[in-house]
Image 1: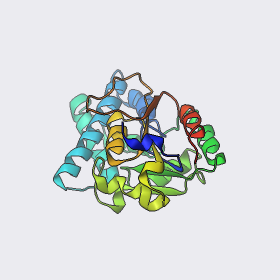
Image 2: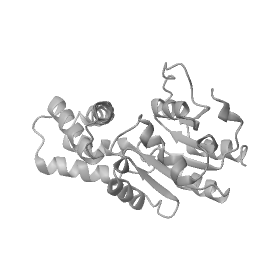
Image 3: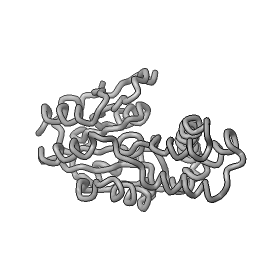
Image 4: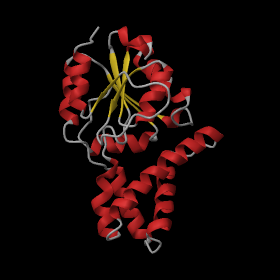
Length: 232
């Protein structure tokens, strides 16, 4: 655990997909389109989306996250539902553009703002993609910054994307709480120097990467309590 656990929290940065927005809220539509395969399709789609972002970051072959999301869907379809029509693909992509927020999130974000903390989204998503998600989920006006991979042409876990937080928020990285539902993301942020909070919604085991997030919870409301106790 890094020394920044002693620093006050002066800002909060959030991962977007899986943390603020439920990537599996596409599951019901996927089930309508591919009966009996909706859950498997949603899970494989997300898995390949993350894998493709890692591969492109490692090899320096950037492609907008929206296009990676489509590529991942096409892989999942080829594996599980090869008869999917173009119109059905378009419906699934449109659903992804307006993912549901987790039910406690808007209230928790408002509480964090009421504590005087500037909030940011720090995401692999390209700018237009995240703007649409914020609007459709009712989160407009809650974030001081929407920080996108698009501006640095790479993805997590490259330092270039984690650089965006302290640059935009104007405080040392050790004073920023980074919140993610992806354990690997929370750990990478810890390596970089953030205070980290892992939202473990599924009861997953800790990744074996020789470190751990500074805190873990299952809901965004727990981030509020953690931050309140550690304000500057």
